[in-house]
Amino acid sequence: MAHYRALSLKAGVECEFAATRRSSVTRRVSFLLERTEKGVRVRVKDRPETEELIPFAALEESISRAAYAYTERHLGPREEIGNKGGGLSNRLRALLA
Image (cartoon, rainbow, N blue to C red; front, side):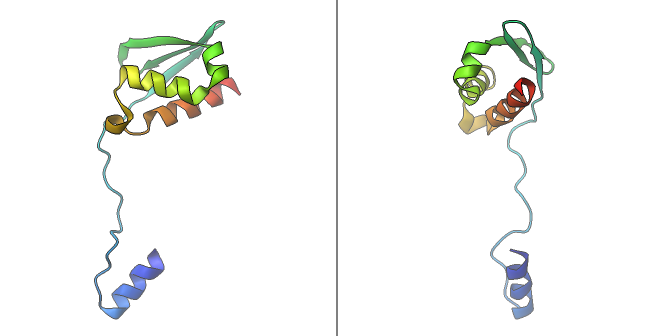
């Protein structure tokens, strides 16, 4: 991409690709995770009403499915909040490894 922009600048033509990323549309969310005997306790930081225990059985079936279900219930649909379920599933995988 940088090579294309440099050639466009050299030719005196305006580059059609922007050089910056778009700003985030949703606010940042931090998840607090705690491993317990029955599963993983998950909650959104500074929002105690979102605390929930995800059982190990659900995590063994599919970590991603459990993470996206949690974010859908507590934050909203993926189309509006972005890929917050992906971040949560990565954190869950790291905790369980």
